[in-house]
Image 1 (cartoon, rainbow, N blue to C red):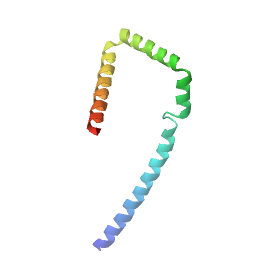
Image 2: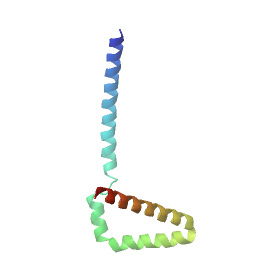
Image 3: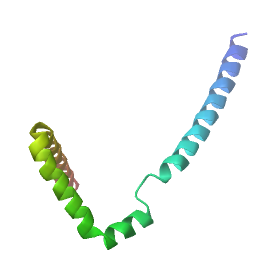
Image 4: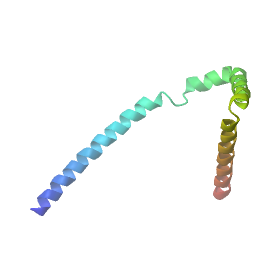
Length: 92
């Protein structure tokens, strides 16, 4: 009796695993169009100066409107930079 219950539970779990794997594949397909594609990289190559100028004006605007947010951005950037440096040192 106990073995039968375990077998049915095992079958149910296998079915849920299959369903979750299918959902994962579907969501990866949907999210693929939002990641950096070749077209996005080509656009950046062609319009590099415009993108940098927009970023610069945004930072200047942010400096005036919300300096705390700017501090937060710099703090996060420094944390990421330190993390990458530590990872590179650990690899070597």
